[in-house]
Image (cartoon, rainbow, N blue to C red; front, side, top):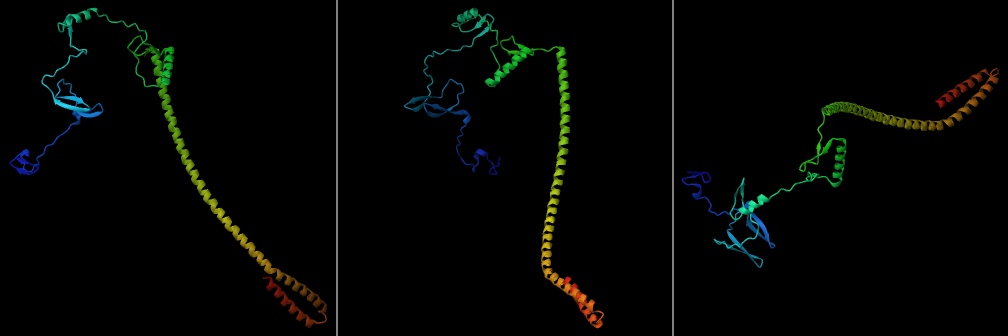
Length: 298
């Protein structure tokens, strides 16, 4: 024989020389339970229903003493009610002779109690609160008035039962169901149309948001350009002011030269018949003054 753990031949697993000899104690919790006796926890076997004990337990001063059970334990007579299996088929009663007359008299004298209760005494369980139960009761009362339900005559059934509808009522109910179905389909179509319109509006709002963002960027660029132009205009205004300040003394001197030239012209006009040669000299001086005036103006 071949043992796969030691890979040897000629022996079985229980006789393997390499196997470790040990004793294993396995406790199965399924067959044990912890019992609390006078404040002391004791692990005991689960009761299987057997009337035979394998040991006897005695409690003395808070301690438990376990002794071997005797073969014939002494049992005191029990005064509890005993249950016997009695089979009755017709008039034949299969019971012990000591109990048979009593049983026959009990069967002969038995009269079932009549239940004359008018209202049902068995109600279905309810998990509603008191307020909800009262609301449900009022709703059931309304149904009773409308003829939807009626009171039950059974003591073991529900308090109310649904009233069977007539053929016309069934047709009306079916028509109402069809109308409700058509209304539901129409509502679903309207919901889809509304959803489509909402998506279109969302796309339009997104486009408007993008346009608004681009217009904001253009406005910021225009404001930046306007600010730059304002700065440039201020700079040019400052330069014009400075140039005007520089030209002011030149303009004053230009006026003086102009007045002198006019005086010379007047004098030259008066002396022209007498001194033609001198007039030519004055003309040269006059031209030189004009050239000087033009250069100063530039």
